[in-house]
Image 1 (cartoon, rainbow, N blue to C red):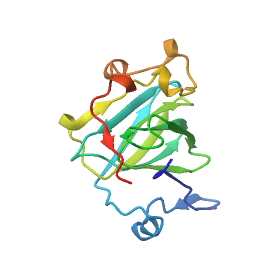
Image 2: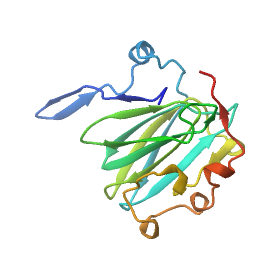
Image 3: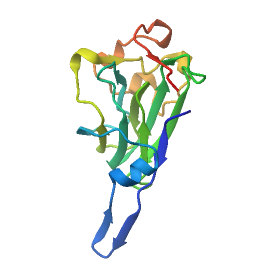
Amino acid sequence: MRGKKSITPKRFGDHRGFFSETYNAEAFAKAGITRPFVQDNHSLSQDKGTVRGLHYQMAPHGQDKLVRVTKGAILDVAVDIRRGSPTFGQHIAVVLSSENWQQLYIPVGFAHGFCTLEPATEVMYKVTSLYAPQAERGLRWNDPDLKIDWPVEEAAATLSAKDTVYPMLRDLTDLFEDLT
C-alpha cells in the first residue's frame, strides 16, 4: 500500500550495549518523509494480547506516525481508510520488536492499532499533529470485513472500553480522501 514504509535503523553494539539513531530528519527526507514530528508518545502494555486501536484523527489534526518497539513485540496494523484509494479497506500487519528494531511509518489516512505479543511491551511513536480529542476517531479492531489475523482470541484480548465500541468499516462516516 502506498505511503507506508518499513525502516530499520542501524544499531552499533559493543560490550556496553548499543547505540542507534532512530530518527534523523535529513535521512527521512531522503526517504520521502518530510512532515515534521511534533509529539512523541510512549505506551506500556502489561499483558500479552493487549489490543490498542484502531485509531486515527480527522483533519486538520490527521497524524502521520512513526512506530517502534523499545521492549517486547507487537503486531502493528494499518488499515487504509482513504475513500477512492485502490487499497481502501485493506491492511498491512508487521511484527515490530525490540529484537528486529524495525519501525513502521504510517501516513495520514490510515487507522492504526497493535496487539502485544509479549508481556510488558513498550511502544514509542512520533506523530505529526498534536493529540486533539475532538478529532479522535476509531475503527472496530475485530471488524470481520478487515480480515486481520490478530494473534489473540477475541475473548482473551485486553481492550479499553472505547476500543470495543468503535464502528465497523462499512459504518464509518469520517473517512479521508485519496489525494495521491
